[in-house]
Image (cartoon, rainbow, N blue to C red):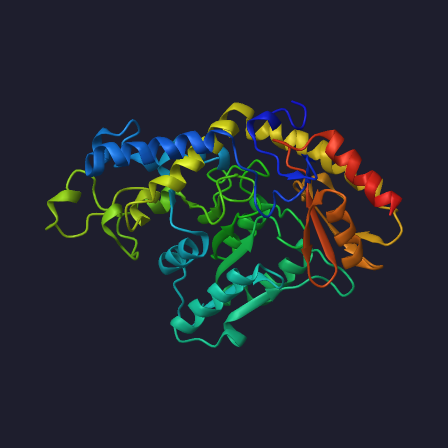
Length: 400
């Protein structure tokens, strides 16, 4: 499959009357053209049916999240019972940590990347405080070597050898938001498990970007957003993964809500909480239908494309960009050179007049992403970015 094969399924932002060179899918994906149709259908059914839409809408609202289950499971390499779409990302991380971060006097620490996305850092620190621990003691940071940007597994092994018996949870980003480094989820999960550590993953920059096999890799839990590579709209819903060995254990404590209760008895309203088996048992409230409709439009494109095909096209895209930019004056690429250790994103440290270069790119029709203090992030999303996009970007960069 050629990169950009599904470009006609998306609205491309216009600059000066022409298609922009949109390289920002790692921040906000483009709108699928069917989103308006799918959302309008729900608005029409709401207008026509009112509350009866829960059962009689063209896509009934009561089970609406289930329309996404199979697509989501395929996307992340899970069984259908291991995934559900609900809430937003940090909310879901907190819900999952409420079940899977179980500190004891001897084992209470949480390991994260030193440059994890801020919301993850705030979340794990607040979990430590919630349980009565000082984050300065309870949070263990996996740091790059001096003068480097990316993380080495050898360093992680050193940390685990020293502190593994005191670490209760490892929570890492599948793809680091800043550097674009794609971690070996299978290997790191096995490393953590060998010390008896629960393994959780924030897959915000991995879902829809790289192909994964969360069930086979024995990941304990994971969560991701849907507005980046999954193209479901600003602030849209999150997905979660709970491995069946946990999800089918109904005795696991959780923060509960009525949408996680047994579907057969949910509307009796008087029963004690009876959790659904699988990831659905972590639901709290009935989900918002309009974001689900937008997400359904996007996930149909992923079903048609296949994440393995998209990953292959992505590797070709980023290899081209890497080869063209790696020796360009004023640019240091901090994303790994190994294609297996990166997704669709390249992070460029601009060593000379970085912000001015970024502003000039914007004037010339490029939509990219600036991250302080000196990084331009670009993402060649294979659903809609063509080789022509990438060649134009490289040409603009080289002409200065």
